[in-house]
Image (cartoon, rainbow, N blue to C red; front, top):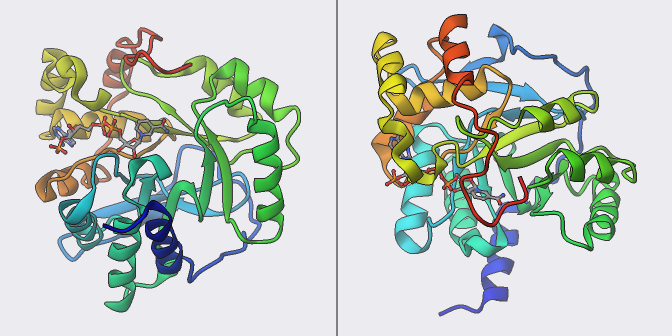
Length: 292
Ligand SMILES: NC(=O)c1ccc[n+]([C@@H]2O[C@H](COP(=O)([O-])OP(=O)(O)OC[C@H]3O[C@@H](n4cnc5c(N)ncnc54)[C@H](OP(=O)(O)O)[C@@H]3O)[C@@H](O)[C@H]2O)c1
């Protein structure tokens, strides 16, 4: 078995073929417009892109890769690329960077441009500080330096609630482009979104399906809304978040669900249904370990 460092070296070798420098452009306010929709498969699946606060464009929807490890994990990531995913969320602690690097390298060899990918690991194209550690400010200063040198396209944070975010940005030279936080029907992060609004930091939802906890996708109200649109509860949840300009990274190891989770750009929810879904918010975390 390869050592951890060897795996990480492989990952870097595989994905480091493109060090993009951010092209500065106008910030695109939400809601996103039709021209941000791009056809991503012959079958007609579409993908919406959004523009971050530094002008970099990113797909609004990506694949969460927590627990996708080993050969099966790499196969799942390659399948995701085949069905149209280009944004991938990983982390050192997911122990799957080598697999992700290999899947991307194979795709690049197969003709997909490296520039199409957006590798978000708490490393590389987009580097996020995983949570508000005591050393966060020092870590972020190092990231700002890499960002200024053009080594990183995007820098951001993760698991910073409203208070931690507001405190943190006071000392930032480069405002975080992304804050990846637990966000789903039961925790809609309204205070955090309010805190981030003026700085245009994007909220990215982790665990949009609450990682299966509490069988949220079996909720009868959600199911009946989904039926109306001829969509699944999972698609309605993703659409609900996307319509509010929130990026999503649902995880699945199953090809059919990868496609299902991508097919959310051909319908929109009525104002009334958005209101019903907003009513699910309890403003409480479903996980015991978060600060959210
Ligand atoms: N920054 C952080 O601290 C942090 C923390 C947690 C997670 N994350 C990131 O966020 C990603 C997503 O979160 P998550 O993995 O915790 O949970 P999630 O995406 O909310 O849910 C994943 C679960 O939902 C199932 N699922 C996926 N698509 C489905 C569908 N269409 N219908 C029914 N079930 C479906 C999956 O099962 P199958 O695989 O069997 O389809 C899996 O059990 C992670 O993979 C990771 O990349 C980041």
